[in-house]
Image (tube, rainbow, N blue to C red):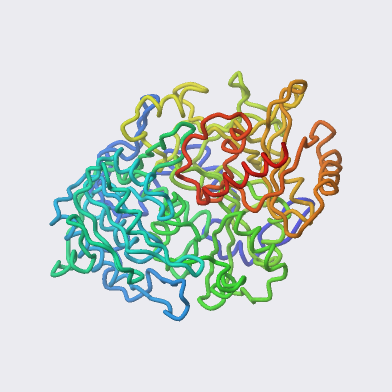
Amino acid sequence: MHKKENLYYPSEEVKKNANINNEEVYNKGGEDPISFWEERANDIVWREKWKESFSHNPPYFSWFSGGKLNITESFLDANKESDKTAVLFLPEPEEEGEKKISYKELYKEVNRFANALKSAGVKKGDPVGIYMPMIPEAVVAMLACARIGAMHTVVFSAFSSSALRIRMQDTSAKVLITADGYYRGGRVNNLKESADEGVKETSIEKVVVANRVNNEVSLNEKDVWWSDFIKDQPDELEAQEMDSEDPMFILYTSGSTGKPKGVIHTCGGYAVQTKATAKMIFDMKEDDIFWSMADIGWITGHTYTVYAPLICGATMVLFEGVPNWPQADRWASIIDDYKVSIFYTAPTAIRMFKMQTKEVKNELSSLRILGSVGEPIDEVSWEWFFREVGKERCPVVDTWWQTETGGVLITSLPGVGPFRPTFTGRPLPGVKFDILDSEGNSVPANKEGDLVIMPPFTPGMLRGLYKNEEKYIKTYFTEHGESIFYTSDTAYKDDNGLVRIVGRADDVIKVAGHRLTTGELENAITKNESVAECAVAGIKDEIKGEVPVAFLVLKEEREKEELHEEIAEKLRKDIGPIALIKNIYIVSDIPKTRSGKMMRRVIKKLFTGEDLGDLSTLSNPESVEILKEAIKKDE
């Protein structure tokens, strides 16, 4: 990698070996997005070619209609005789040692479980709940559902029983797949207990339980051990033929009200987009060992932990535990020990690594691509990640996407660039974005506006919200009309066309008529050496309308008033006097989703007394009480 002014560019060696290494792909994708995606569609296995590439009846659209396929045939059937490692499972207890599952073994295990599901009465189109930790059985369960055409609905294993219940009630699923428990940070968590509570008042008729930690669990009438469930099941099964537009899975994402939204993704478009983005963005090849740290309960876990590496014929790393336990640098040791070539993680994790391991002494010579996901990464963390982890050699692909988009849509391609810290990059080839003002007009460079996606959209984007057509239209196709997808994010482009995501549209703070975004304030604050992490929210002010407050997680103890003065001076210098922080709150944790997104709307509501809405997607719900105490203490 080499730097020119404020931009980084890939080295000649990176460009030489990259799947895409010139601007031509952007030109082709921009001129004819539909042809661009048609070409990518030829890269997966179809039983029958589609009849219509793209159709649009606003606010609805479809891709590859009439095409017949099953996503699992593109990697299970295609590699069913291969002894190559498909899944590299790294358990939290290191003494257990790794477990390698070949493509041949995965093919057989998926078929056994798929046959068992069919024997239990699960049919094409049926929703199936998966409430599991990061263990091989979770991957097998997902793929088995896809194999028979059932819609998997994965619920993050650390979610509460009530979060599970809400999702199972909404889908009316009859089968839940779970485990007795899981390891995390040296503790054994009893998952079966949460599952038992979560299936109450639902239509669940059967609960399949994988034995992970040998917990003493009570088996109810509905329960069956995984081993008994698959006993005597054949390891061959012809995959269910699916239409491209048939639903493949439902994944719930947080809503501003008390009920999460069930995002629907379809079979053909998701398969095409997943493989295409993996090859473009991560430069993925069959000899890669790809470690996405995302849990399967999140869209990143679906697309880039599970499906992308498999559909590319690579090896996926499935990591059970906490990356900084029992040693702070365990994550780095894993990269060295297993020759991980692509490492995809969140800014939250990067900041934690930086705080605990300022200088990374591991070689990390196997790495060739680094990725960041979850929220905009601040400049200090980007530079540290590039320098200490990538050794100034690896491109850092900062990625923007959502549960709704199904895959990454904005980034810098590793063989093309350019890369600029805090700027996500350019829209992918074949993707049409715009940045609009409140009147629906495109804004010039360096001016903020609403980030929107224009038709023809992309094949892997959502096709609706489960049982909630009205919310689908209101949430995504009302703000700027029924032909424009509203992302709810605010962004701007620089003079090079690189996009910077500055936060959710509701993360804009209007101070005395001036618009400030939480992202730019947080980026400035985290430059203070004492600050490990921060979240900014706007609260009401009688004179200025709104004023910002900041919640800080510190690397070291500091006197509050002194730190407040330092931050205020930095904001005056970087942004201007209008960016004056009214108050700072020193806390031990900040509410986040599992993907690392800070839940600023929750923070904001702590000051208004409003109902906090859906908290089921928080990975650390206890942090809400921590913030409440900090606010109360300061009153």
